[in-house]
View 1 (tube, helix red, strand yellow):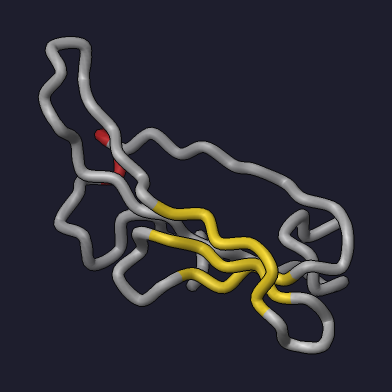
View 2 (cartoon, one colour; view 1 turned 30 degrees about the horizontal axis):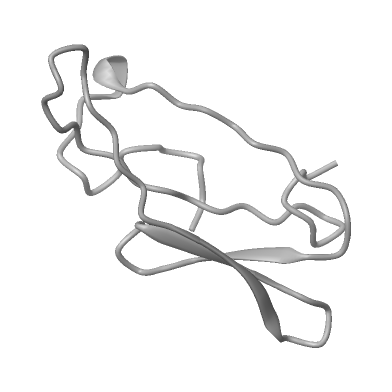
Length: 82
């Protein structure tokens, strides 16, 4: 998935989104699930070694908010893109 147009296909107005970037270093490559609720990190050999999931977000009243994860692998193949 790309982060060029966050919220694309999620029926969310861009001005109402909060976008948080997390840069990683090393040789692991992020692979987002199709539903956007998990990201696996693959080793250079293709083994999935970390599973990040169960994303949940609420507002100040405890009401659930729509949330999803997107992955971007930069030129070096790591999530940092640098």
